[in-house]
Length: 252
Image (cartoon, rainbow, N blue to C red; front, side, top):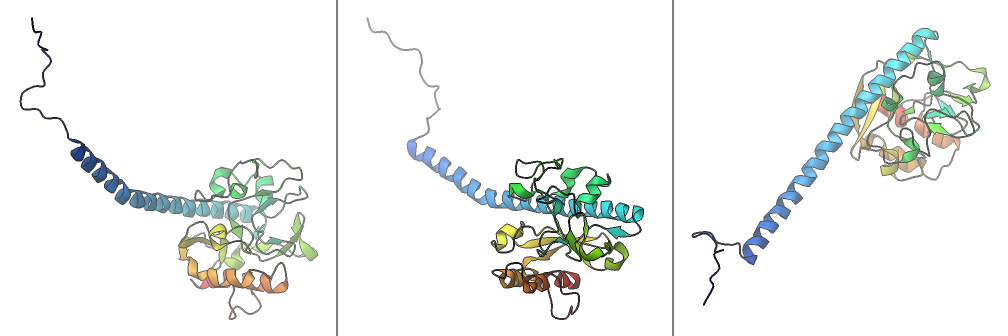
């Protein structure tokens, strides 16, 4: 007796051939390759917008600090290194620069003081390389933004018995930016948005500038170390017509 299987494919249905499956897979791969760059660009735009929002929030905290401390704000740089305006606690464990805002409890929601696009854990919020809250020990703690290098600091106050920068004196000038790190590194390391740099001004307005504003000085500073030339390339207040990173931020 011959037993016939009762499991037959329904009439009219046809299985996919190998060629058809490969075509479908190819179409899916093509769509993914088209969509991924668009999604990546949208994600970066969202992060850049969040970065601008964080800068504005830090600017509001600066204003509150200025209101309580006779218009003074704790911006500047440490020693002879004009790119160190991001310090909260220095290598000696001393609270310095914008860290004074943390000490005075003007620095609420600390997550807002970091750029979401920043890949370097030394400038991210609460990482092993950048602990938060600051430990107070000899562990360097940084924010994700750098301040205008207006005054050289020595420990917890400006060097040479100079006063802090006045908020009203920089109303029309650039005050903070998301350029960070040592300038001898590559430009992708010191500016986190590959075509833009976010800058906060003294009136607490923030906007994105083309990275071309910064790149010429990046190249000039490389190799100069901590000499006077590097300082002038960061900020030349004595002769703004010569140009420098921050004075060019002012013009844009």
